[in-house]
View (tube, rainbow, N blue to C red):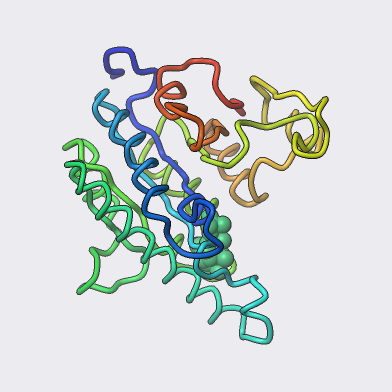
Length: 240
Ligand code: UDP
């Protein structure tokens, strides 16, 4: 069932950790997180069910220079813990604007958050609560893009909304080439053939296999998330 005006009834929003930094070099910028939360609240108010996977790159990445010389799996667990911090900050910000939110972590830490349970997460979504999935897939050597594809498929989401700094997929890097143009739509095959990097290959393959279309858009553009959910010409749709 689709709600008044909205094109999708359930979406998976992938927010990178870097989206939370704003112009800061590290961590969480309060003004930025409140701006993002304002956009999420608007689509929740449209009746859309919102699941979120948040990254951790603003705090720690298993492949970051800071992790050099470390055992990769240990560094990745640190990265997953960073996503839990972001999830808690996002929940706090959402609740400050009266959006009921639950966090579920792929790694158990019962004093801090609930552990991921598929049925419970679906129940929360049906109850119109926002669900934030923390700790990625719970496994080292993966990314939160892959976690987003996985949870998006598990939650039977209509689409994965990949929030980036750039407002879509371009023919070339728009920051370097002023003649680069935005694709309005692309098929998965076109994206592969043109060697366009939409997300990491594991995540991309999973979306393609599960017929989970991807919308790439900029969370920093005023009302962009609402425009995406209303099906307006915003960002790039990668479809089957
Ligand atoms: N990570 C992981 N397994 C997962 C998801 C994430 O090991 O399923 C770790 C990995 O070290 C990664 C870090 O968590 O670098 C932060 O996630 P990601 O880089 O995807 O965050 P984003 O780029 O979206 O901020």
